[in-house]
Amino acid sequence: MFYETATRLWKHLPPEERKRAAEAFLREPSPELAGRALDALVKARRLRPQAARSLPLDAQGRILATVLDPGEPLAQGLLVSLHLAERRPLLRAFLDALGLPHEDGVLADETDPGGTVSTAQARRAREALATFPAAEVEVYLNTLWLQDPDRWGSLVPEGPAG
Image (cartoon, rainbow, N blue to C red; front, side, top):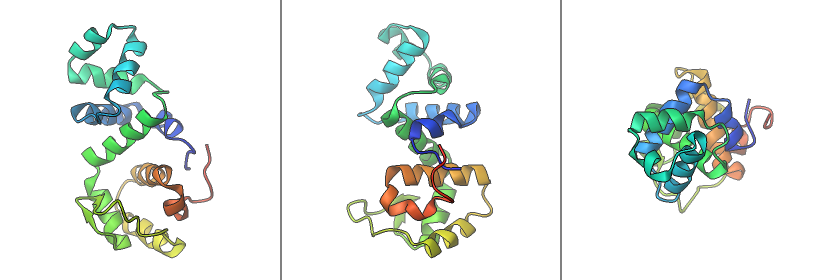
């Protein structure tokens, strides 16, 4: 099942997966989203910003993982961090199956998106991911689709669900 927003996808991740994503994000926060993450921590625990910043990384991750509506930009950042930190083999296998150039699972040239992915390409790429946990594959494909629905539209199994 694909979700129509990153926030909905984030909300439906298991708590432990949200925690891993939050910790990965906080280890290397996007400068554009660091403030949003701090705001989410502050609101979640009614902390002052200084107190939230001084918490250990694992405590910040635990708190951020409990925020079910971090806002669309932060939810996207958290989902991307989950994949870049823990799921590089899945990313590499997928992009290799599509024949797209990449650097350790990250598209090599993001200025040239290379067009849309056909249904046949999407089917082959999904087959190449058969050895990975199905839930992880679906979250990854949903995340890709959320980033660029035009390019990755063929990944949606039967249209977005939520």
